[in-house]
Length: 213
Ligand code: NAI
Figure 1: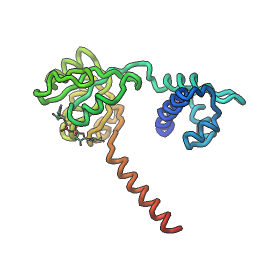
Figure 2: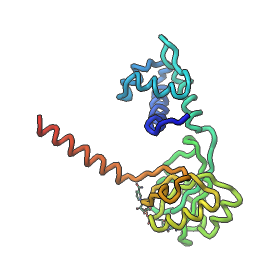
Figure 3: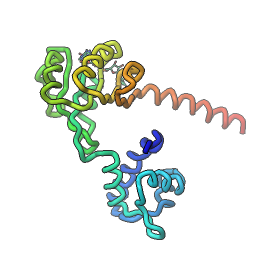
Figure 4: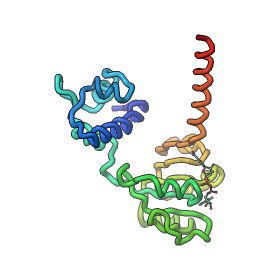
């Protein structure tokens, strides 16, 4: 069954929200209460979960622990996918240091950079390896995913190599729209500037709403 992208995007939000409820020692919640906390509607929540089965009980609501476990299963968080990070600059080292890969379904297996001065430096306990070793590493370790923290031009060449080494999932921070050239690849683009531009647009809309009232 094809799950819509908007549902997939809400699943991590549910997962986080349910985690917060558990921290507050809340183990049972109705779709109405959950909807209120997430600024969604109860029917939206029921529809989302109905894509995957019956998680709630009429008149009882949701068991928070079980629902969170189910969402973890749907998101495949238990299976730690081996991932490599390319580009140990400002962005790459920040991501390596601050993202809790293990709790998010991945294992950071290696970090690569073309700058040999960085070779051997530890980032989040992982030594930086020179990109000369990339092919051999992929052949021996078969990483499933790559995190691209390099400039657009560098990504173009690198993605060509990585796909030929069998890497097909990309967490893409570079400005290279790689899904255009690699429609079969699984890609999550993260470009913070896009989000900021969306905020710019929405802010303008809000301003014009205020001015028209
Ligand atoms: P940086 O200059 O601090 O680091 C880039 C690193 O990539 C350097 O260590 C460099 O040696 C390495 N590198 C370059 N080409 C390489 C290659 N072919 N193979 C392996 N390593 C290579 O730059 P910074 O600030 O970390 O940004 C990196 C890229 O990410 C930039 O292109 C920037 O535009 C982009 N970026 C994207 C953001 C987003 O929201 N998606 C946010 C910030 C930056």
